[in-house]
Length: 435
Ligand code: UGA
Image (tube, rainbow, N blue to C red):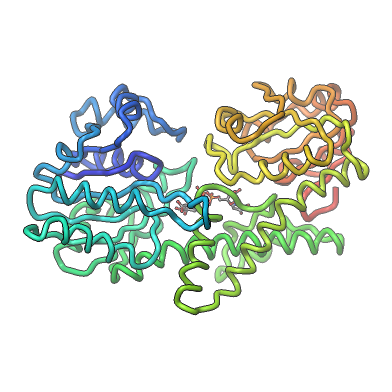
């Protein structure tokens, strides 16, 4: 099948290379000429393990091409995927849909025959209706369908998530769209992933409900961690035991500094906005969001307490800056409010991250960035572990202890077992368990 993919961010690029790898002829479109050049040279604008290999393989096989021209991509195409970003607007934090509508218009202007337009970007309920309206108004002469096919991939494991998903959701309003999507996803049948076929509006909402539920699990376990700290419980043991109930499940019960990234914070807020618009209170999601926002600042307070009540003039080394490992993404990373709070409290910040330094430099001022964790921690009064990169899971604790001014470790991801940190002479503060 010939497929067009509009937008080459996380969702678009991953979908593009994976559809190509499944044997389709894919044309990816991006309006940014520099991005297109980079992709053509087999280099990915995003950091995602394994993506460049797949990109090069499919370009070399002639299955994948990249262009700035929607017309080139739409010529003789059966399915066009809208995968552009929906970043939060500065004014009110709601998803900005202008790129989605722009892509709909470009598709409409460039389409040459019957087409299924598939919205893969995360979009509020009703966006599919608006996309349909735009295309109909632009090209009343054309026959087309608009479907929703949300993407559930995680950054850092995006390829595996796309290629062996837990489920595939088709939100369709007609048989043609369902047939096109079923045909395209046929190769993934072998993975056993169930295909859920539903109406478009339900499909749009499924994506938000899934993210809000996962975010709720995280906020729930984080609050349990707070309680564990007061009653001398251990949240890691609690989560393991609670998660063994198959009705609950053990995933997403890792207590930490609060969820971040480009999805959970934005999507939970967008869901609340939709609910408000329709007059339906979503108190559980409201609680999830409020708990997460408050948590980010409480983490800084935790560091200040670990430092003895004041960080004025202290050097604090923050190891790990991205919102999660295996990405260079700094969007809504909990490290940002933590660092700003500590700076306001008078601390000097040194920071290290294996991949996130470039993006961190754009977002954080007055920070001494280092390309090595030990250089970063030299003479520090406190080291804060923010992101559970594998590299930070296997630090030489003896060396770390020797180079720090005072051996205080705030492990916000519960990376190191307390006995181990103690054996190396650290004063350890972690999340929801005794140090
Ligand atoms: C999330 C969802 O997991 C994907 O299914 C979804 O497709 C994606 O959003 C999206 O909407 O595009 P992602 O944001 O890449 O994926 O990352 P996650 O692995 O879900 O982590 C999000 C945040 O939750 C991170 O800050 C992470 O540290 C935190 N987290 C996750 C915890 O604090 N505890 C956990 O147990 C799990």
